Amino acid sequence: MRRACEPLFSEYIDAFPCVAIIGPRQCGKTTLAGSLPANWRRFDLERTSDRDLVARDPDLFFRLHPRRVVIDEAQLLPELFPALRVAIDSDRASAGRFVITGSSSPALLRRVSETLAGRIATIELAVFSWSEVHPSPGGPSFADLLADRSATAERFLTLKPRGDIGDVHDYWLRGGYPEPWLKPAARFRATWMSQYIKTYVERDIGRLFPGLDQDRFRLFLQHLASLSGTIINNADVARGLGVSPPTVRDYFEIAHGTFLWRRLPPYVKQATKRLVKHAKGHIRDSGLLHRLLHLADRDALLGHPQAGRSWEAMVTEEILRQLEWRGLDCGAFFYRTSAGAEIDLILDGDVGLVPIEIKYTHSIDRRRLTALREFVAERRCRVGIVITNDSEPRLLDEAIVAVPFSHL
Image (cartoon, one colour):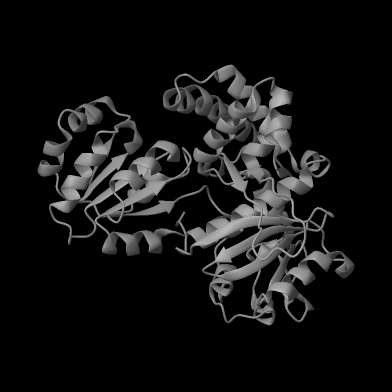
């Protein structure tokens, strides 16, 4: 399956000496790097022979391999990064020399920012998105219209569906991890997800944070499933787990930094009302969330009290992935006043300021869009968007449009 970020990857290869592909384990980083021409050499630091070859003398390694080198799981060898900086600086004008991948951003991004700043471009690769699973029907995409800051609400009426309502619910239930899409049997998907969670805790987390209480962190992961899509109060979570608030804060940083959890900070710019200041968060992949909640089929999902929050998180991730893979720099926030007025997603950056409400329903009660309408008017946004399960886009107001998820 063609990855949506391949054009961005090619652009970065042509412009930067080094490109980093980061993302969760088993999302397709190695496969993306494998799209490079055959004259690129790959070294996997999880393979003992490759790690020994690189670790013995990283400076010498790069002198012997000065270009067209892919290094997988680069965060496993910290001494690699100073040597990589020296290798890049020895021929700074040449682009497309090195690609590194990493499954854990806390270590990798820290070393990239400390050692390789200005020398490297980073792509955050996620699991399959809806737009990758279902190819474009032609015409401008949702991300194209977000990127076009001259596009008004009416332009979004031109969007075409990528699939039907059954396809939407199938993707929502299964999530985007590639392996369960290649082998779609429900039994395999459930087993794969369980093993993925087990490996994530016992190998990845255990190796990155050797002093961490794995049993306590496993309980935290189960607790995350019930917290997904809610506003987070660390003190409340700490009481529920029987640990200190600083420990909970560290757990959230680990979950966010390893791409399991997304933290959405509150949007507080140009505040005209009293706002909620706690962050919101959700598990990034809907399939992983549903496995943690033991939801095996669509009926179980639709009957679950967290279905609405799961839908909101899935839509949020789809939008953010599409923007990331176009190379658009956008901050993602949520908005909620102390009186309870809420907007699920605020984009602020290369697309301008765009508020997005996310509804599971087919039709929209326009009386319930007061917060969105006021936000658009007060901040003079070019468009406000409501994501729905309707069959076609509809103009709700001069500057507010409803777009079905199937059309993203």
